[in-house]
Image 1 (cartoon, helix red, strand yellow):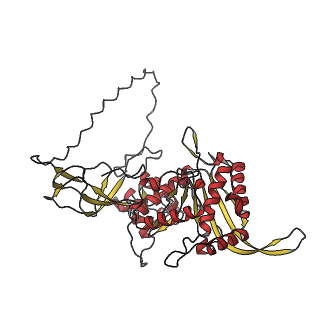
Image 2: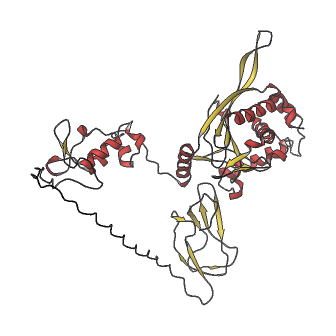
Image 3: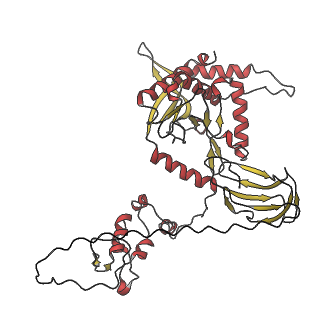
Length: 430
């Protein structure tokens, strides 16, 4: 299983082009794999005979796993490597005995008899069983689990001796909405919707990766948000004029058709050049600052999204950005992007304006330090300098910042630069 990117740990076999016993030569496609970001055909690198297929269609293999064996002429099929046993751990040194101290003899305190049904998995302060409000005994472990998960023991029936509530009863109990914040198993979540009709949709690799990375982003990146309104009347007029002036091809179709998103990408790339300290990412013990503006653009897919990267967007024309973005989006939707086409970048853009969303805040996509959330354009009333009111075309954008890289003032400078460029769009064309 080849490595298709730094964050790709596994791939699913979706098709075999050869069968066991088939002859292969270098360059012949052997199988097709699908990851959370792309799908790719994997060719043979040597000539021989496909003697063994170890992963069938639909199975998932870790990066580096042997998915098939190709033997050369006269070679015996390779055998799977036996797992290497881990070396036995050295015995822990015995602690030195504490010096004995003389104690005065006295009456032996009377203690409760040992409870033979008490579960012990981790040390507990209270070793004896306790009653719930309705008089049912519970084990210490069951009480601790219930406390951690926010579960009311009075609503649980015990399966232990004499109806005692034990750990397995708590683990199988349905959780309340508040308790869900502490995490729940599949069975516990389903128990909340018992008797309700729903469709059970297992996660594919893309949805699972998105869920894992977004949780990681929100838990590890200190987000803060900056929002501003931008007048885009001049931008709309420039776009309409540019598209009207596009030359016609032999088929009568215009050579290009610029979208508002193309202008937004170009302006964002220019803004990062004007505020270079924000064109950076966090790298644990240092900050990496970049010369060019590599911009990720979120593309919606069936069941998820991906962020292909426009490299050197600050050096490209609007028509080049438009053509490249259209190509990346089309190939992203059929999972045909190459790893270098969705890696890198210091910032990203997520545009939901075409869906009528007025304003939202996006989650930063690591390792990026910022992401710009773009809302829909609308007609809005604004006050004129003489105290009157006029209607303008306006768009609301929200910048999410990684506070480790971009401080409040720096984020404000970046957003102000972007606002100035869009309100006077001719300035980023020269």
